[in-house]
Image 1: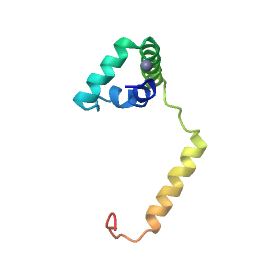
Image 2: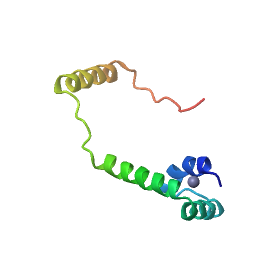
Image 3: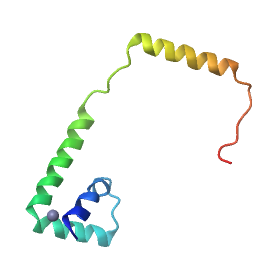
Image 4: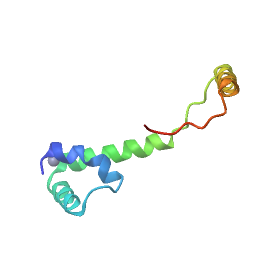
Length: 86
Ligand SMILES: [Zn+2]
């Protein structure tokens, strides 16, 4: 496995979505490549920190306008169920 391959697989690795044989190659590359180990650690750290950040709230005026627009649209729509896909 190359460093580029390793780095493209990091997101899948964090999501536990690697196939067993790919994960073995991933782990093997990790223990032999200090650059990728460092890259993986910083990536993991960044993801973890980002998840801890509070989600930005909408400005109250904008939220009010959005709610009004959605309510208006819902009131205007005919009460039909649309089939998904097509
Ligand atoms: Zn590497």
